Length: 168
Image 1 (tube, rainbow, N blue to C red):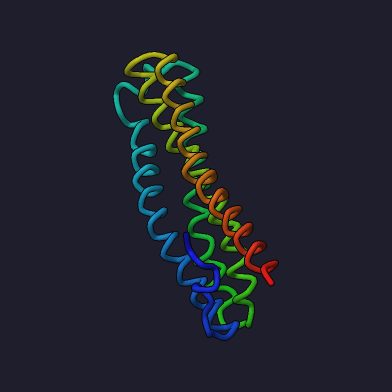
Image 2: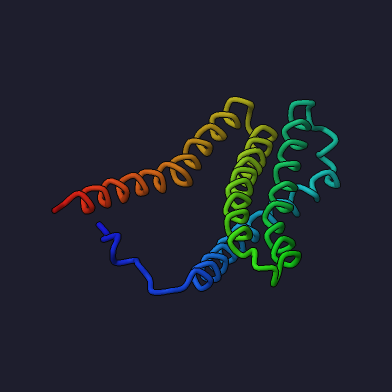
């Protein structure tokens, strides 16, 4: 696959932090669009006529899904507030590290919001069985794509580095 040495850069610590923060902001722009659409959809649901016909379970799914989307919006916008507050204080290393954690939390809550929204809609349109089966499939797919593939590649890269470093 790829050679770990190929990706080394001749950049200062400040340049690396600026580049990393810029890449994080690009990731947030992509995720933010999805969470904003989901959140807007969820905010409009209670104003629909059929909302009053939801069962207690469906209302609970709705509330938890709405909360997941709301947390996602707050978490995905937090790096902007963090950067604004700490701008020019020489804390870019903290901003980058904290933003990394926020992106992880935001992706988790976004995933829960997506799955919850699908479960709610399929429960209304189909059945509990279909809704929760599809929700389980989406959960497995999300874990595989958002965690499994990256962690697998990270492990492979680490093993290649260890093999490369131990070669005389």
